Image (cartoon, rainbow, N blue to C red; front, top):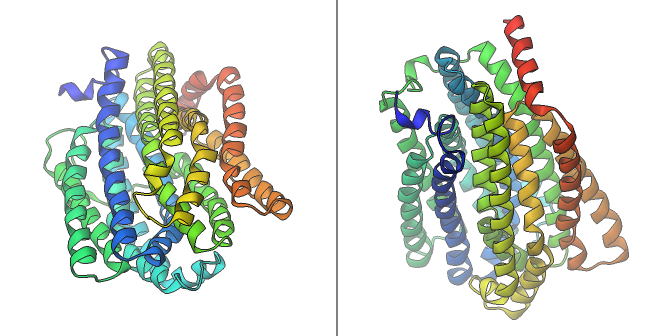
Length: 456
């Protein structure tokens, strides 16, 4: 049996988590670099209008893709649990069902994204002077939605079985391709903002293809056979059961963020460009949050599947501490160097002022975001996906929207909108802490296992 199959359920806990999380972190860095490079190229070669157009589309992209990525999280939990329990037949059924679902959802997402982008951008109050470019960017991006969905499906499968190195290699390749194509399409040929989305689409297609080749050519138990790609209904029910809460959570929170973006849009093009520049940088702060959340979800799923409860308890403490500390260090650096960072994307002073204000209002609270995401990842790995959904929808959607709707009427300033994030991160962290300390989520997992075994 290959060593990597044992890396998360045997041996040193801290070493196993770090060896899994580090490639995820590096991969996310490369992914964020080429996302940021898109904004840098667009802002410096096409101007403020193009940068605002790209920035105004970000929340909409996440809303559309977030639902399907949430279901992919559910598949990862099912695969990781069966992998840890060495139930390889059930694991293979889940993998092929996951891929079948990705193909179907990618096609649906393409149709929705291309067909309804002008309508949704109108709902968001996108400024008229950037509206045509926003539509162009959004439609080109969603022509390649299948690549984005399948890449996330394939990476989720590899992460679920403890392989975080190969996705890193493929991201390095696709990042290099994206950078070169951005420079050629935008800086040299001046094809416009849609060409930046085209560069991203091509890069995502390459990374998805490399992941597919890895899964179909490996000799491990999780090998993908394209002839066996179909829906296994027992696996699909499990994937939906674990993934639907995350899917709903992602989409509804993204919808709440559209409300935030709509309020930002109301302050004009400089505010949109400044906050959009921050959002590209914010992705770097979320890297330790994302990588440790994914690592903890896989770690918990595999070890609970192997019934190693004490190992789970020790691992989650280590993972939470690492994520929270790293996120706060990044937040402090962002606060200190905010003007220099925002000016990388745009030299207009008004744009820089908006971006700096937005960044400094939010960044010192990154530790709370990290804590919330880590607990959510732990609970998903334990099969308790409904808890993160309830907490995050309550705090990051309901409270966030109510706060903005009421507060902006009395203090109509962009700072009021920016404060929505730290306020709602604080609320979710308090609720997660209470649940995490009081709920018997580890042994609830065993009882859920027993119930599902009797149903089968």
